[in-house]
Length: 202
Ligand SMILES: [Zn+2]
Image 1 (spheres, rainbow, N blue to C red):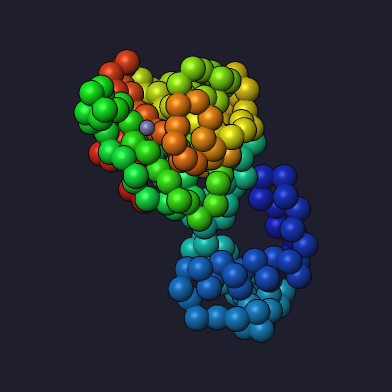
Image 2: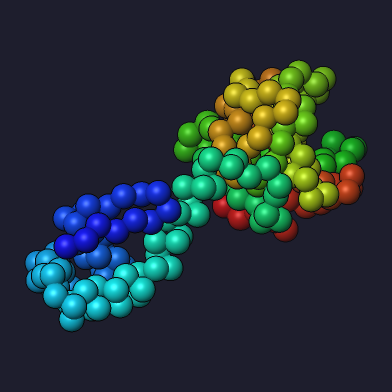
């Protein structure tokens, strides 16, 4: 049985059988490693079958390749889709007037864990102490959007870091003007704050 090469990955015959079997499972074809092995007997008819199966599984192989490349490239421009920036929790305060002034973001409290996550791909624009915000991180998403994460206990990033969506950027805390452990989270577009609840869901 011949070896097969996918973009610099040299796959031996026995590994190829395993890959064919798993690709077929992904593609919904009812097969198993034993039947894939049967097909790998070295004659022209079975080689043809093998090629067809590989073709069926091609999109799946491509996807895996993209995931690997993406991990190396560290995307720094936002997708425009935002993820919940905390580990669970509930909205203890919405955006709107509060205490005679405008509350520009939402507050998230009582999470399941204390990691604070980048809501979308971006580059860290600021990370440090900032008055009433306490320790806060600002991410520039490169597409007009910026997000702010305030009152952090500690920060895991510095200015200039590329942060793919979901990157841990800090730990929830109660630094600055804050009455308890929570995250203050803001989204702005072209300098104007938006209601984060129009962008993120728990
Ligand atoms: Zn707040």
